[in-house]
Length: 196
Image (cartoon, rainbow, N blue to C red; front, side, top):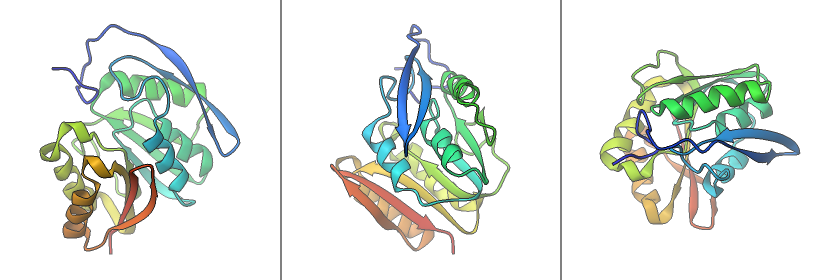
């Protein structure tokens, strides 16, 4: 069965443009079938973007989809360099298009299955993880993430309470020895763990 975390979606194309406003700035994002939340920027993603502090340095948007998180962070934090990665080749193609469409100079997108094609170290990792892929897929990403963070770096993620946010807190506590819930709304939680 095909999912938005398939590497090469074969569903018929349905390209559309969605608008997204972040702190007074308008983004125009092209989406397509076979990618996550193609009709609009979903509530969890929006909450994650709006819960992020001002950041700088090297940023990784892991599982970027068509790019709303990484592009928003690049727009809001001009001093950072944003790497946007996804297993889904269609999503990465859209993310590249959206970087150009919005004239973003401090972001780039490329295909990577998890961390397989990533060699940089980062100050921030941000993700709306593919919960439907299951713990066998997402928990190894949590475990590997610490190896790609600089000391003092942090991972931020959004998870719904009903989709396992509290067990994710427990897992992140095992890996990082810390996990804070920095925001909560409508059953969604924003989690942060810091590499000490």
